[in-house]
Amino acid sequence: MAEHVFYDRHGLPMKTSAKTLASETDFTSVGRFSRSFDESVASGLRPKAVPGILKAAAEGDMFDFLTIAEEMEEREPHYGSVLGTRKRAVSSIDMTIEAASTNDKDQTIAKACAELINQPDFIDMLDDALDGLGKGYAAVEMMWDTKSPIWMPRDFVWQDPRLFQFDKDHRRKLKIREEGNPVGLPLSPGKFVTHMPKLKSGKPVRSGLARVAIWSFILKSYTIKDWAQFCEVFGMPLRVGKYHPNASEDEKRKLMRAVLQIASDAAGIVPQGMDIEFIETSARGGDAVFGHFAKYLDEQVSKIVLGQTMTTDSGSSRAQAEVHNEVRLDIKAADARQLEATLNKDIIRPFVDVNFGRQERYPTVKLPVQEPEDLERLANVLERLVPLGLTVAVADVRDRVGFSDPPEGAEVLQAPAASRPAANRRKAVNTTETADDLLDEIGQDELAQWERQMDPIVKPIRDLVNGAGSLGEILEGLNQLAGNMDESELARGINRARLKARGVGDVKG
Image (cartoon, rainbow, N blue to C red; front, side):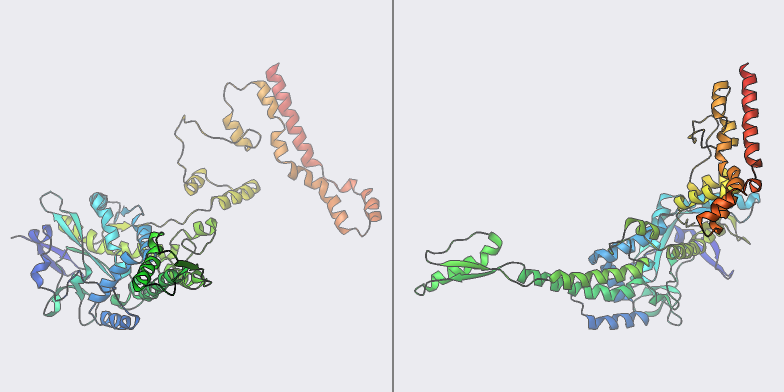
């Protein structure tokens, strides 16, 4: 059977077969596990058991930790929601391929890689790889199509992280678990996408978000349970049955049954002469104690996972939430950068090696994180600086606001003639414009520059008023200002308008 060679990050060759690449790993052949994957760890879990679970995970036995990390996503709505938000913030980014260079060979390789990442299953695989955010690592197995001219991973299967373990020496290299084999089995080259997010310095086994969020999960589960008991006891009025001193034991039993059942049935019958009294309880404040504590725990989980609380339960304004954009941008960018590294290491390099041979430089997957543009601020900057002489390319502004260049002949939105810059107005004039239309526009350019024209005239008056100590000084100073006023700019504007009017008059005849 022909073997195919991949190269690790150090350039060392790793051989594998087409059959291995095309088929899914048979994990049942590596041994029978003593514990079932269906067992629950969260059910009945007490706080005193958590340190033992975390210690065992740090030492390499991650079975219970990974089980409870999975259950936390199912049992705790807030944790599952914010963790899903963080995953989708990265997996929803449009991926691109950047070629190694501009030569034809590198462009051909980049085009093949683009076909690979544009597969629908490839997009879905990103969410499975990001499962490592909560658990510390994730393993996705690739099934290759080895029958087509270009060998390509077609199916991506999420594999339960409990099927794997870290090496005993450094706990950084992932291996397949085997019962009775403490060393484990090596992963087949070119078969697995192993994503280990670096959320903190240290070993991957201690990096999962669930390791920090587990305490909030335990405390909140007890809080909700106590709140439910509080509501059950104090949420309904106390029911007291009163019977006659001569009542028989059978009548007493009937009264007790009626008292017990009236809470759920809202109806009941009692013998004549017996009463049921409802006593309103004065106990209140369950939401102030249990509700506030549950909300506090949710906010801590939001900080752990999203880096902020404004888009979850803090009651902040919509504007604040939009600024935070659900996941803090620096966290989103770090997640995207780390996922890029995993995709390039575990998918792009093996794909290029098996189809095009080893390369000096490889194409790279990019997950560009775009910072939301503050369009109002951009508009204010342009409005203030462009009249002062700042030149800005229209294409740059369109890119910032997300608009494309209009095709030739397309109907476009334009500012009214009175507010458009002179150069743009001249471009907008068409062959059907009449002399009367031109006459109406005379003075608009000059009017737009009125502040620059009038400032040399008004400035001496402004300086006099600012420096005078009394009204008398102002009146006396006005007689001496005529020679200090510069009306040349205003005169030039009036002269330009007169020349335009003369030109239009010549056109009209």
